[in-house]
Image (cartoon, rainbow, N blue to C red; front, top):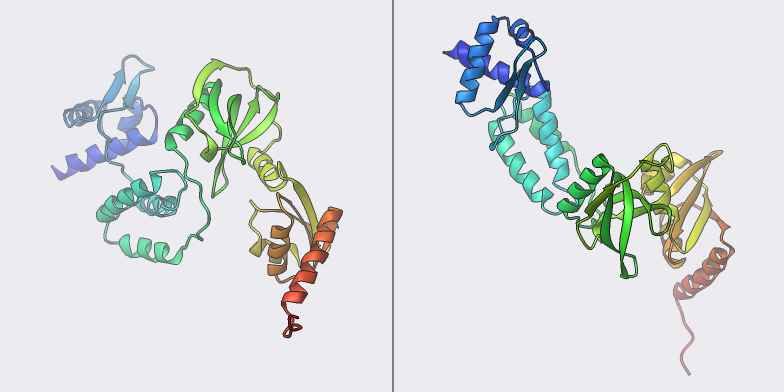
Amino acid sequence: MLETSARLLQLLSLLQVRREWTGPALAERMGVTERTVRRDVGKLRSLGYPINASPGVAGGYQLGAGAQLPPLLLDDDEAVAVALGLSAVAASPVAGVAEASVRALTKLEQVLPGRLRPKFGMLRNAVTTLPGPRAAVDPEILTSLSAAITDRRVVGFRYAKADGESSRRLAEPYGLVDAGHRWYLVAWDLGREDWRTFRADRFGSVPVPRGRFTPRPLPGPDLAGYVHESIVRSPYRYDVVVRIDAPVQQVAEKVPPQVAELEDDGGRTVLRAGFDSLEYPLIQLAGLGFAFEIIEPAEFRDRARELGSRLREAGRTERPASP
């Protein structure tokens, strides 16, 4: 009985690994006859696992989609990887996913073999996720966009700009990019006839699929790089460029990639970023603890002198008495 149960678990695990197996391939992998494979497939079906079979020389067995999720069969490394992944997803900006990941993690920890629990506990306690501003995203929006990207279908949706103004948009979706604290859609905006990045948390409705479209050449070889360039430079009011007296490795430790673009400049660092105001980047740059030189815009230098004057005045220990 124990040998039969172990063989059924092995068969189920193999069916999960590959989309389709032939009978001879399964028999060879398991070290049994094809007749035993057929008998074991029948036992799994009696237990409620939907296993499809196609006849003929080119036929085989395939684990189908059922009403209930079959148990996952994971080796040691896979189990720890899934557990750590669920721990990381607990900080996800996707609405509802964090709670679901915690529930799933609790269930997984309960069934982890005793030999794996200390290993997982040490890894989880050693890894910490830095908190940061996260905009909640409706998972249905991401699901709808993913389907449209796969099927090459135009989508229609309501979208709110930074000032809160909402409008109806029609776009060809090409990719979703997870920037850590936000999700972005890269799409060709049919109304504006140009490439755009859309923040998923600003969608005012679930995207509705329309007709199919013929793919265009992408705006860059790397959609993640395109999104990074878009969110650190445009569509902000000011494009700020400064030279920092510190190596790029040191600056990168304090400036996350979604905030600014960093470039090595012979031992120093050129920082490029977009901002809607000039006071905020001055405060952030001063807080880095490095000397820096403003390259552009010229208005940024003027604002730095004004702010420096106010700070010097605020730092005076004595003030003249009021008349």
